[in-house]
Every structure is written in structure tokens, then in C-alpha cells.
Length: 243
Ligand code: GEK
Image (cartoon, rainbow, N blue to C red; front, top):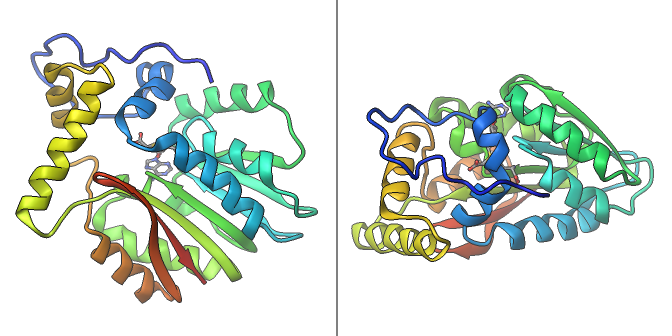
């Protein structure tokens, strides 16, 4: 996916408004996520492999908070199950509009239905794969338990939830070091100190990270048989929860 360079936070901003997934973000999104989330491309490729392993004949694979459709497209490239379809959902109209263009530009075997909706309000059913790739972190804390329980109910036995999140750490020294390493990662990707600090302010109270222990506990409470990290790069991790 081609993308303009992200320079949204490059100049000093008097007042920093809360981060939203609007048109200006959509224009630079592939560059922004690639240079901000350590391991993003590795995770997208692995979502394709996981879909190949878990997608069942006659079932549905969900990409919740799909943005521009990277995970849905990776799944489409790898699914070999028969009569399978993908449902990709995002509540940002600007994202969905650009995602539609991306899907049309790269046609493939499995149908992708694109829905503009709040993922808390959609019915998950007959699912073999559900992907939440850096999306749960934007859902209010109070809604996360019920939301994951509804995903669990919609999954078929043997189904998988792939949950990727920015993590928080219980131990203060870990929190400090992991945050610092993420900032060093962003600097190495060409972001300035000003860009890093203004973006951090914009995401305050918008992106709410939790510890791996909190995620694991909630996933188990929702009914998942097990939940483990399969990938971590500093404070960004991807988990596999099995029904
Ligand atoms: C990727 N998964 O490229 N309902 C629907 N969509 C939502 C909601 C909600 N309640 N809250 C946030 N979103 C993608 C990357 S980005 C992660 C996901 C990031 C959407 C929001 O509009 C945005 O498109 C996406 O979740 C989060 O693999 O930018 O850090």
C-alpha cells in the first residue's frame, strides 16, 4: 500500500487535540503504523499464516478495526478453506472509504465484506478467526470484558482470536525501559523528539494499554481455554487466544 510520509506532528502545535482516525491520518496511515508499531509487518504476515491454519470451511473470519484492510488482505491471500468469507469492520468513515479502494485494487479469492460500524455493536457468529490488531486498546476499559465475551460466543470450537496490543508493565523499571525503547525505535524510524512527544499527548486517554496479565485474565474469564504471547517487540505484543 502506497502512503504519504507521516508528518502530522512534525511542527509545534499550540493545543494538541485527542487523536482521531480522520482523513489526515488515513492519508499517512500505512507509513505511520509501520514507523510507530515495532514488528507491524511481521504481525500482518503472521496473521495470514494463522488464517491459513485456523480458517474453516463455511466459516467467517473477522478483521475488527480493520483500518485500511492490511490484516484482511493478508488473510485473503492465505486462506485455502472453502466457502469462507472475511468481514472487515471499522468505525472511521474515512478509513472505510480508503479501505474499499485498497480492496478493489487487490482482488482475490475470498470475499471481503467491508462494514462501517462500531465493533462493539456487531454480531460475531460462525467465526473461525477473529483479528483485533491494535484495536482493543481504543475500546473503553469498561466495555472490554463484554466485547471479548461476545467474540468468544461467536467463535466456533477450535477458533482463534489474534489480539495485538501495546502493553503496559506492572514493574516501574520495565515500564520506563520499554517506553524508552519504543521512543528509540521511533527515533530510528525518523521521528523527531517533538513528533514523538506531541503524538504521545494526542494518544493520552485515547489509547489505553494494559498488562499482558490483565489481557490473559480477561480472555480466560471470557471463556478462552488459553491465551499466550506469540510475538513481542518492546511494548508491542500479539497474543493468540484459543477457544
Ligand atoms: C491494521 N487493524 O492495520 N469500532 C470500530 N473501529 C474502531 C473502534 C470501534 N469502536 N475503535 C477504534 N477503531 C489495523 C490497525 S488501528 C491501530 C488498527 C492504530 C478503529 C480505528 O478507526 C482504527 O482504524 C483502528 O481501530 C485502530 O492491522 O492506529 O494504532
